[in-house]
Figure 1 (tube, rainbow, N blue to C red):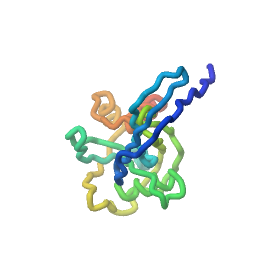
Figure 2: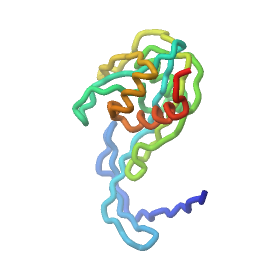
Figure 3: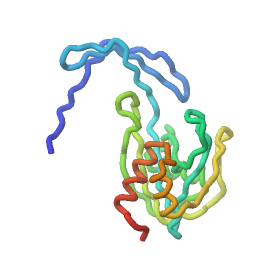
Figure 4: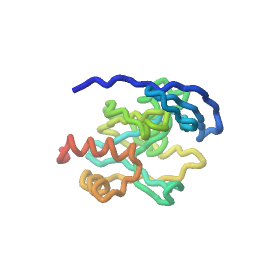
Length: 187
């Protein structure tokens, strides 16, 4: 396979047009390697994200559901969140998020994949983890603005959610599809 040449675009001007806790937008004027210019290009700066495919000792997938205002739906999702500045690594962020949102923890953890929601306009990465043999350790520890429910789903239920397009969050669907492809039947 060919190794791609990094053909960086030159930043001619850059300014912030919004700097809010959940929305930081940078407007840039860019020049492409061929000399063409893009006078207004927008970059959304986000902290890195994490998500977790968490599976209990009994083989159940730990999911959450919550309302998503952007689409106006309540959706099934993996446990996920942002990498906080005080977290030393994305793995620590993922373990913290799983415990906070679901009360589950321990188990065997491995990095599953690293993806980008949209490398065209987003500055962050999503670190996806596989956590097997997790167990309930406590109740949920939700922020005051979080309202979500925990669901334990079977392998077949997760596959059905994927096949019927009920998992709308792309950074959750991608690692789940990879899991299904590498584990065609639950062991």
